[in-house]
Amino acid sequence: MQIPDHRAPPSAWRRMLGGLRSQERHTPMCPMTPRLDGRTAIVTGATGGIGLEIARGLAQRGAALILPCRNPEKGARVAGELRAAAQGEARVDQVAMDLEDLESVRSGAAAIAALLAGRPVDLLVENAGVWPRELARTRQGHEIAFGVNVLAHFALRRDLERRGLLPAARVVVVTGDIYVLESDCTPDFAYGGAFGGMRAYCRSKLGNLWIASELSLRASALEVRAVHPGVVATGLGGAGSALERAFKRRFFLSAERGAQMPLVCATQPDMESGGYWHNVHGRMRLAPRDAACDVAAAARLWDLCERLSA
Image (cartoon, rainbow, N blue to C red; front, side, top):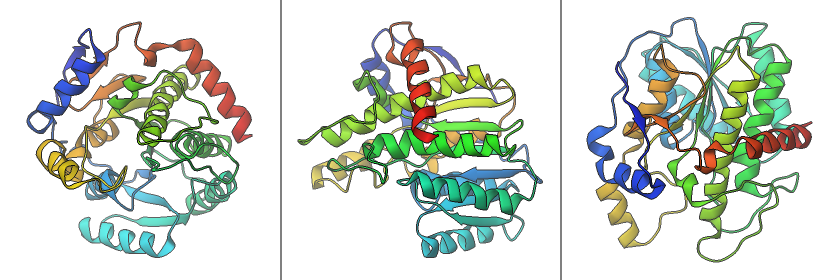
């Protein structure tokens, strides 16, 4: 399929608001080809929201799925639903993993290695994310949006790499254009008030872009694609007021539509590694002053995640 190659408007706000207004019309539908039979994919956050729809799309294309799940009962129900969606043609396994705890991430990676028995992971979709309603911390004491959205995925990927399970995989990092509201990403961000949780989420999405950029530089054997799926009506950030719910119904994408651009990045060939892909604008060419292009900050965050996940 043909994806637009777009240079961002001068204002990040124009890009974000323009994308919101036109996303229902311009978000692509991912083709059902190529098939993924014989390929193994890991999708985090697959028990709901766009993660479930991404996993469903991969299963329908024949991929074998491994789903890291915090809630085993919910994971089992979702696994059964995905097998049914693939009409029994896809294998779906789950492993216990709580992204709020790095020890659980490590034990989950070991369980994945045992399941694979030496076979490689072909696709890793780093999708899971939290939008905190109030200040909270992970088991290791890190601010929770940073700990789950950035650090846990970093630790999972590094553990899989060390076990030799990602020799030539495609890595899809789900981020969000809302990152433009912030300029830093740290594990110790302290916040309060009505917008504190949103700021933490925005910072983590900037961190996702920085890590994806560094990964594409440091692991040339991997295909890395950061993706903005669109503004999607999921449970992130809570249900909100009646007015907020009405706004979401009017302007936000459904989870199924929101999964389409990540599925494009996960399945389609001939897409540049290391790029930032937008559901409305396609391949983004960000201005040098954009926070996502801060190469020094990206390198610092990578080194910090290396230390924290060691």
